[in-house]
Length: 256
Image (cartoon, rainbow, N blue to C red; front, side, top):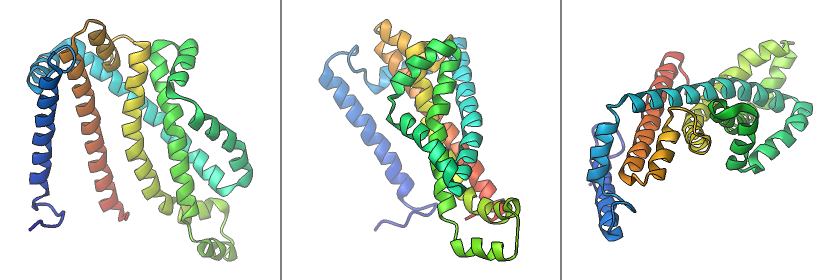
């Protein structure tokens, strides 16, 4: 019998078994490839990973990539929320931003990275690319939150002659908070992917993406896998910390 997904149930056991199955198939695929250069197994990758994370190069690379992710979030989230509020409340603003959102969604990420590299150089391109990818996500989430507001409550506040600022503060903002937090959670994962992808392409000094590219160029496949594993773990850890922070904010603020 399988318990429900409450803490203390059987689901952590199944999660552990899932990790074991993943490692098993990883090892199986490595043996099937027949070459460590093509597909190294978990053990050589783990050994290289354990060596890599103790080096100054890795720590600086991780720090630089983390700073780019944070800057991308700090720039894109507030601007995305403001744009989402404007487009959700004003049809003129919606018409103004619609072409921008359409262009961003239709443009390949690699093209954005290459074009931005011409203007901004290797150090700023990952940040700009992260902003350009996360901004419409936050705007779309905010617009969805605006659409979730009960029109009858809007009319009620109009009857009481509340100003637009008061209506925004008392009605829209409390409704938007869960949508903004949900968008922030998904945006962080997207930001890591975009920042590292840009780093692989433009190779700024000391970054996770640069480490991947250099390992690939030197045919150090276990090291390439180790850099990738480090990136995945860093993204997962930051995602978990953000989720924990959101849970604390929800409990203290009574947010559903």
